[in-house]
Image (cartoon, rainbow, N blue to C red; front, top):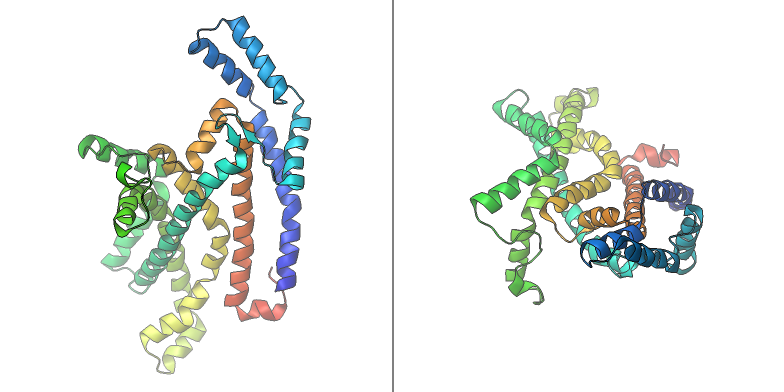
Length: 336
């Protein structure tokens, strides 16, 4: 198991390198950079002429290496990461990129993990409930919920909730984690409740999509497993219906869902990102959009690299979980 883990980690390094090259090239492909943003700001808000603003933009471009070819910029960026752990400097936030990531990524991961846990528990539970009551009204209702969760866009659900909160319920505190009185206060139960009041729409929307997928897959797999020969044998031996389902059918029906864990964290991250953009929460989503809008390339590239790394890490974790769940995989000495 340790050897497999080391091999997977080693194989992830060239994948991350290729992803970094492609990501950096795509981000740099559109015309313009942060110096152009500075020029427009000087002209629109500072009252400078085009010549004056362009001169300042050219000076900024030379000072920060934005006038160098894209290949040189990439080498400087990736070299700083490898040799010094330096992800570059954010021109828009006026601080190191590592600080920007350190402020926003933990919040994003925490929300994504909460959504993942809720989606897994509820989705698997509802899937078992629906499969063991096939063609009943419960099965029909849960199947309808699953269909809506997999087809309705998350940004549309976010817009609907924002409309209801702001225009129907007159909620004014949108776009923050806490009310003003709890911003710098130490943790307490009241502060936790206030946090839940602010983030529940993001958690609910991201959880809904993952719950729908888990429920649909679990229901289908469990129905197939319940018709297997070994399940019929277990019933013939006199085991109760609950014991047959939970001890024999469910563990085998979980295999595809375990493999799904390899992509579920990035899926939950993108779900959080989509909804956080609508709610303007200070997480990864708004930072990516904001940095792309002004040409702050190092922030965008770093966040995209982090999301790519979560996909790779998720796949490694999924393989490890599958080996722990399925004795046949351990006996073969590897995961395929």
